[in-house]
Image (tube, rainbow, N blue to C red; front, side, top):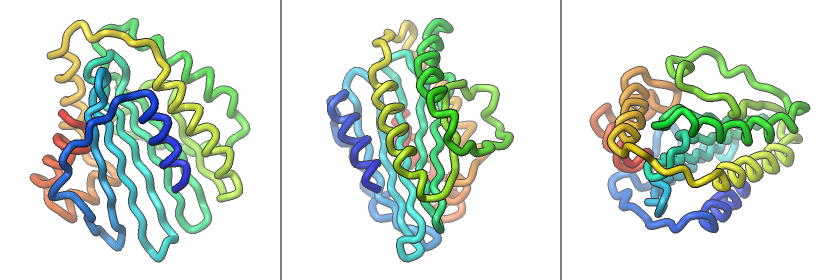
Length: 218
């Protein structure tokens, strides 16, 4: 999707990206979907991965961005954009992987941004195992494709705001990494729609390698 390329440009201007070897996960084909996965070390921030999937003769497209801050005390940020059969879904989730409680204050800026988009069609995110560590200030919308322009605008503003958040130093690198690793381990253990797809298609051990080394960089 065009918006994903624009988000990459925004991130590339804010971070020095060093490509990470994704060999072994290139051109994955799962359930009729072809996956293109890229991963980068983001200097001074941590790890960023981009995943694009297309299938069903172009009727379904999905873009995922995962920002794993390890060198800044920011929340982990996961972005999903799914276009399928005339509908458009926008999901942005923030997870508490910070070391210091005051680091959570940055969420206020993202809450302020999303408050300006109250007219967008809300999506019920449902109940999940990770709700206890999911922070406010995220995005959850779903509508017809006519709303895509507004979703694009919000996506770009949201990513720009996230990458303009203050540079908060990590006071305990070991704790920061462990909290991030705990989230990834729980994701693999408890599963989820995309996690289960990978486990069923390529097995749990290979999925672990994908998650640890490529998607989250922990």
